Length: 499
Ligand code: ADP
Ligand code: MG
Image (cartoon, rainbow, N blue to C red; front, side, top):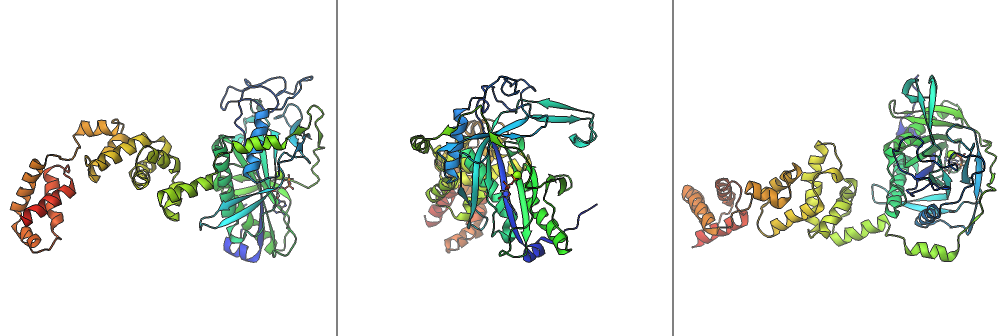
């Protein structure tokens, strides 16, 4: 049965939406959080295990120092208070994806306390998202349900357990309730996730690939009549793993809850899941704040002591953050906000930076990556990174143009040749003989021919009417199969007319 939905614009006029995001980021350490089991995506099931990741009796966890340092890095990037003392706690639950029957997480003493993340919205304005905490915990394994419809446990006849992921380090970043979002609720949720992903990538602490589940978010949404009212009851949509999915979840939940409230109904505090096939959220289990995980400090692990000196050492290793880097490059390249946003949205920032490093101008690099190469990538449904052309190739094409060896048309053909796998720009040029005619004698002969064939144009040019110059250049281009330098041709024409 299709749920009743209110129009989004109406819903945000009648109600004040509040959102909250709990994001899991899988760290890219070589080994697990509490044991030296090797971590690698896509390994054969149950090959990345130790007695600790299986929770065998007598096995004892030892914390992975790299994972803690990664957490501190993220804490610093999110302006969190880094707690001098933090503690691991057992979160007890039974489910066959976790052989120990408890997850090791942090409860009342997380490594990272309050902070914030500034996110840039489409109109260039900055929205500050308040962070509640960012704690360290280990991941569960993966269950595969066989025999039912769409891999759900309902109707399955058996389930398979893969514990390779059990014990992989995660950081969970929990926002405070984000208020004041209004009609921009979905945009802010999406922008927050993208900004977080960029930071995590820049820090090098996670592969940050949404599609592989390296980052996933629980999306909390509630409505209240006005910003002065207390927070309304929230729904929590679990494990959304795409940016669009997060935006659509927020939009859908606002529309769904508004329709219920408008009918005088009540919002249930429940977990839901986002269904990509139906583009809607579906109800899961009812949840109350009394969910009892019987948290208690893990007696197998000592408290973490993070000294101010240690934090200083990590601070010294912090790379430039994505927004600072974008601002720096934008001013170095002399681009407008819009031009810069196009580059970022096209995923071309790194490529253009590398092309500029290889000697090209920013304008030239931008023109190729957002033009010809983007067009080809779109046609082939590939990302720019996967195209068979490198920043060095693009810089080489730009150099050939600067040296007068290629004109715009030939340069385009050369780039298309590289994209078609014909080799480096130099090889493509050589193979097809694309170089512009350097021999001024040969060029002059073609110019003479073109002028002789068009006496009317010559008259106009002589009288100072330069409009038909294009026709002469066109004729010479045609005669040289596009291999003339347009500037050289017009220079020769001027010389002849005056002479
Ligand atoms: P739990 O761990 O049970 O999901 P939390 O109290 O940690 O509960 O809250 C989860 C997330 O939901 C946090 O990001 C929090 O800011 C957000 N949140 C809490 N109350 C609301 C609300 N009424 N509306 C929207 N988001 C909320
Ligand atoms: Mg939650």
